[in-house]
Length: 188
Image (cartoon, rainbow, N blue to C red; front, side, top):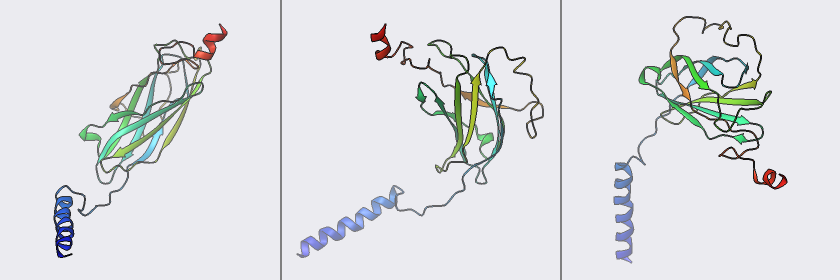
């Protein structure tokens, strides 16, 4: 019985030393999540359009790490999250734009297709900011879709580009290679 007590004591004592040394038993500090204060994006554009999403965000702790972008597309669903890693100068405060060159190697997206872009910011501690949802509709024939007045606080020159969204849209109803889904192949 004494031997059993010694083994248990050693496991607890040396186990706690091990866990403390790797950081599992250290004191956890609470950090504040980032906050997206303002945003702006047009809601219509043609296929191949370069969509700029203007963001203003801050983090009191100065530890913003990355921007998460997720697209929902009818006929396809939700895409994997795209990450933009923030440069050190954008960790506490950022005001600028992220850019998405909307295209697809599997064919053009049909007219009037609506997508939704979900954006949030994650900090080093894993805290997520408020989430913004941006709708976008593909329309050809728009007059000067790049000619728009930016609202405050984005109505100044030389706003920096923060990064690029690299999601590639798929033709609705198609698979990754751009072919028709199996049920459509049987009908043809």
